[in-house]
Image (cartoon, rainbow, N blue to C red; front, side, top):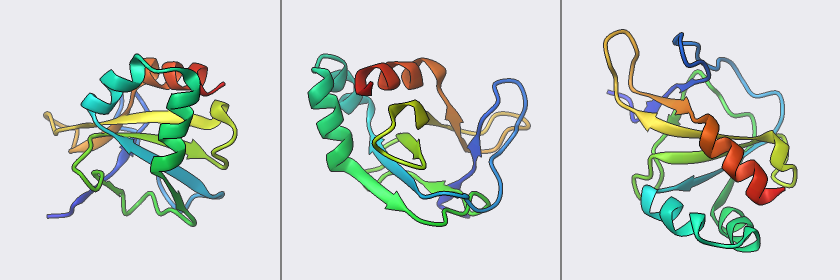
Length: 120
């Protein structure tokens, strides 16, 4: 059993990201507890948290998937191409399998919008 899980980008279909990333990617894992704390923080503090938790990934292979965080975090912010551009962020949350959908990382629009705004 793999400890890595695919990233899903569609609400209705099991559309998974595939292949190698064409640009560098940065990720920052966070937990529900982190989110609850960050939600009360200033935009500067949120940026500082993401910067301090950032992991740079060159040539990320979507086919291999992404593991949960080092402390079993089940949320991750994906920064496509550059950490400095908040408009490139997508937040994913880990979801366990249900019927035809495997264990996966599912994009979360409301968290993505919150983080874009906080980092913007």
